[in-house]
Length: 223
Image 1 (cartoon, rainbow, N blue to C red):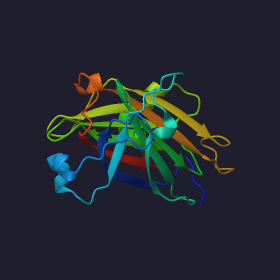
Image 2: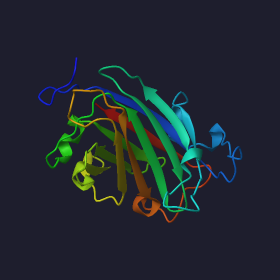
Image 3: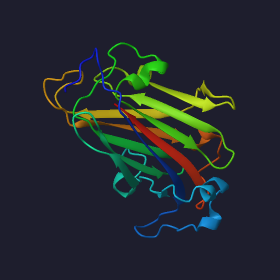
């Protein structure tokens, strides 16, 4: 059944991982932290997947990391009402890079300036990030767009101890899509991609985490 603006499907896929930071200087040289080196949260949830996040700074061009060498995981499936997504993660000396590409046969976004509380009513991705045990939790949501300026289609929150509060977190988002046209169900689309670049300084760090650090990441794809 095709979607229409007046009646959108509200499927959600989500995935949670522990991120194990590795100093990767060449393919296959990543450190392999043992469970004893992980934070308490990781030890309490042994069934949660672990992703080794490589240190892959780009030395040429404008990309922050060497994309082909980033870590990858995937979830979901492709059919008329559900999406499949790949997520890639890497870091350099200055920032954490998170990228999600969704195979989406129908892309929908709000053509008007979006309100942060309704971003997930349309095609969007949410990244949940915790930078270690007892650390502050962050949440970033970015919605798909056509040609509009993206700043009105993204928002950040920070856990203040009683819930999610709007945050002025310093981060940047990039978007891309392929297909016919968003907000048009006359033909199937191919999908969209959204990446977030989060400076370590914005997370209160003076640089990248230690090579055996364990962070938590959750990814939700909103359809």
